[in-house]
Length: 541
Image (cartoon, rainbow, N blue to C red):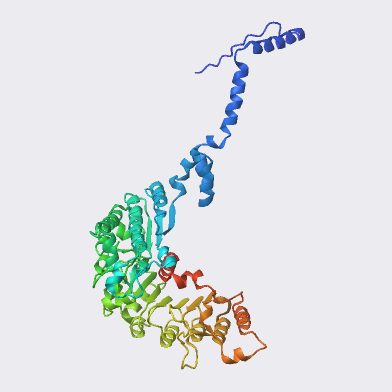
């Protein structure tokens, strides 16, 4: 039992009467005045409250919560307020994903090192793109600085650009910086690397002359390959692995570093590299059997064999929904097309997954090879032709419009010719233009881009009217458009103005021809465009 006793408090003298109440009031005020340090405590309390209201005194959790509502540039600006806010800038919860686009320049290295030192050990999604823009903007090619009056391979090797070699050396250092920073990151779920090695190539194959000068013993290349395998072996949550056009990072033995548990849960795998010598492949059908949960896959077309198609149709594998294939003339020259899937294999894959869609990019592929590749049962949704030597024929365009009319949504036709005086005409000796037939047959077509092929103005108007507002993107370079002599002879109508007006009316939105080809990556950077489109294509499941 608990007893609560009320103990009466002592009353001040004379508290019962009115006069006593007045005396009590004076007594209390006197006691307050005589109490030592009362004013100083009150002033200290007020100062403490004022200090707590300052931004520097906010707890770290609150600062991180504030940062979470800001964009990355605003976070950087806000972190400049004081050192305490700077310490909270790189809190792991604020940077679950990191997407970096790097120029291969020595000035990028210290900034990359700082950023990766702060975020590399905890980031969950990392996407890095390397672009050697210095080559493209300054003419630092392999023959830069050579005497035009003297020729020969020896003279060309003698006058190798210092800038060219410096960019290649910086490229290796930047790749090492990224890989070293994430070697022990076990939270990594998505890892994507893109390296624009097309500027480091001649005729599609990397010249060993440059690489041997930068890395004569091959130590850096071996270190990069070992770090990549170490990252794979240390991963515990990896779901997405993508490596495209990188310089000798992935080897045929790299995927063996993945544990079975990680391989069994992998959802996306992209290995695009046409520099593997001989008949070597980055992944075999036996290795693919471990990736039972794979929903999207991107490979070199010559590496995608009939045996792989059979593995993907096995009952142990989940249905594959996205397949991106790179057809490169270098691979076709060194590898055979005899092992590619036939039409029955494509039918089996489509029965296994009714939502399977295919994205093909073809670099300088001959028409006879494309006729072998384009099987009727491929659920082709996107196709991108990029040519430097070999042009696409009208027969190939007509075949695509007939076979893939139910699936095709993206069609890109690129011919990077030097002489712009005479573009190939797809409608030559034909009653109907193949591009117009493509727009008529492919009812789901939403993107059409053409450069380096003659597109007649009246055919362009017909395409816009056939597809209407469903054709979201129509990109045709100005130099590709040609006019009939009758249109040019009519002095009452400006043919260019009439073309813009009629195409805009057909599409239901303002339209104009592409005036500056450098403004569109689909024309100037086909590798990068394909890689980015492949990423979004695979993510759109």
